[in-house]
Image 1 (cartoon, rainbow, N blue to C red):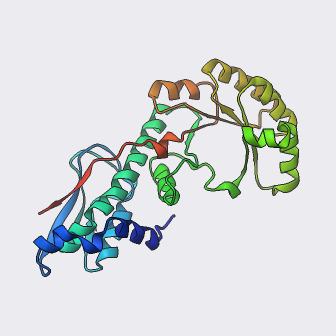
Image 2: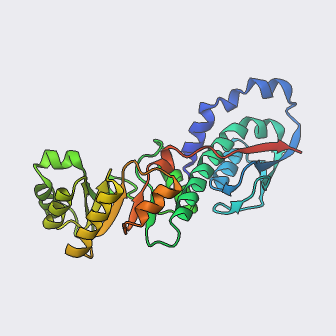
Image 3: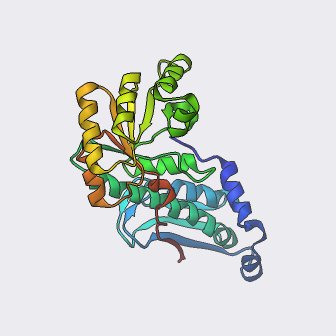
Length: 280
């Protein structure tokens, strides 16, 4: 399981100026201790609760936390997620950074869960992409997993994905796949991005392990899936490109018979989850 680097939390705290919180320092006595509760104002899937607690404790190890739910739990609006106790100044200064992590990651998990439910009953799986916030990829991809989705490549070394510019630079699909076969480990699959049926045929001829149907209409996607299943039934099929998170659209794509739907929107467009810290 991914563990949040303490340096990431420290940078986020420093970015918010928590060690020079003029409002808190000027209004709250140093010796005052308080307790509070982290509450959700909406229904969804929680992700980042452990990160939020680490954020509070990073600023002050005297803060204690009692978790009432766990990351990955589905909750209803109004649910108490955790209870905190410690120096009031530290709780107040770390509040926004901690809730930013929690709200952002829970938003990703909740959107992912929505997309997974949309295609329930099909054999298709929901994947994320590398369209992540710089520095937060590990946390965001973990949130996708907590929402019931699956991870695509974490980084560029995890697999061969030949896209349009690779194809142009290499001189064609066959040339790109052939060169990748010479260089990449036999343990890595080779995936080729295709926008037309002729490109799909080229990818199959070249011996691609996975075909990515990019920006295709539903009708063209149906034709591409039929072609691949007929010629190379073991080849995996991924759909991507402007699919979005609309339930009906996701169902329509899944019904074409693709194995995977990859969605950049899971990480780059998930709405923030409404969560607050309330002092008792």
